[in-house]
Length: 300
Length: 262
Image 1 (cartoon, each protein chain N blue to C red):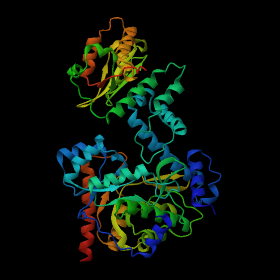
Image 2 (cartoon, rainbow over the protein chains, first blue to last red):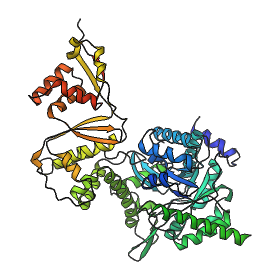
Image 3 (cartoon, chains in turn blue, yellow):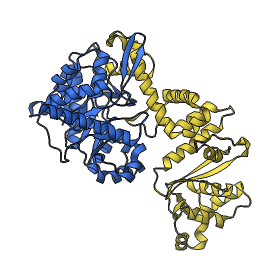
């Protein structure tokens, strides 16, 4: 089947949520990094779910993968891919897709997610989340690729908004309009990274609340929270998505707006640089739970 | 307006080759010059590559210091950019790269240390080399022994250096400051890297054992491998060396490799 007919089918098909077999978590989870593997296995702390970067666990039989398989019976797991380069015009890598599909089969995750971004061109990889121009062509391309991955995995994937540090003059629509159209065209869900939204809104001067109003509520299935840092370049302040700190007060506030708009969703704390003790991550997750409960109480 | 592919190629050239001219017209300045915006992405590009490389070569980083390692990572990345959606195994060509870079300098040993670190990394993920029973040889009549050949277990690798790289590697494993002075002339080292039960083991082998295993690994018959071992060490004892090799699980799949006669 050609990519064109795949897209056409999704354009005409109803885009309702495809159910996932795993139970959705009720409490906030944490991003699991290798530093905490052994401690987690030994102490089995109270945390309902974990999210891992898929690419770190590619290769059945590798030590990292074996550790994850030991952890899996004790915690729900979500798979977060960072290397598919979905938005790239280079072909998708069959080997990468095979590994991802194997991991999904082996671990039965709650969610599988990727990013609204690209990371490679002509075979060179930046291993970063590079921004897309929000054009008709990019939308068609992204939707086609999301469909391809969903068909391969036989399940819905979530697409996450990324932090960005530049915009393209050729963008025809806003990021939220692009994301909403991607949901319509591919049937994907949305992983709303509240920190990324805050960072990009600040860097590009748009209103984060307008963004939240612009994405379809039923598609939002997971929230990410993380820390960022501010850099001053000349007279200009730019926010960098560093995943190196506590969630900022401003991002907690925006999280509140998001929860009021979309309702409670499984929420994840990410921390990738200067990774703190496991307790710190778990305390941050508990804070997200308290914030969610407080909002719930206000609403009731 | 450029196509998506053209735009990504312009971005790639700006990012990887520091040549942003074709990209510039397509970026909004929004009050901050485009070069500063691109620098954020370049910092990410170099930072994540450098961190991944440092995880694979911690001893090299320690030996050359953070600043020079930073420069090495930049140069290596310029020549060998990541070709995969993950950064596992980006350092495969780093030892060779260092070898070219350090040729003719007093730092020739760095590439050998890097080769040992790479072997160590790689064999953390190799299948375990488990000892095989030497009685397997009883399947063969003694007069065919000279024509036996073997396969090197996939969990084993041979690393040779003119320098004392094993000692250099060992003293740089702990966080503690190193006070030991290592005489670079105290080599050579002949090392077997082996994936054992509890992780990777590094064994310093007698020169004769190393020559024997290297010859066998390259497909030689036992007869020719013994020759090579005697050339390396005239006190070489074939029986002892073979027993040691079996005990470490280095040699598998004994078979007769008689030359076909027609």
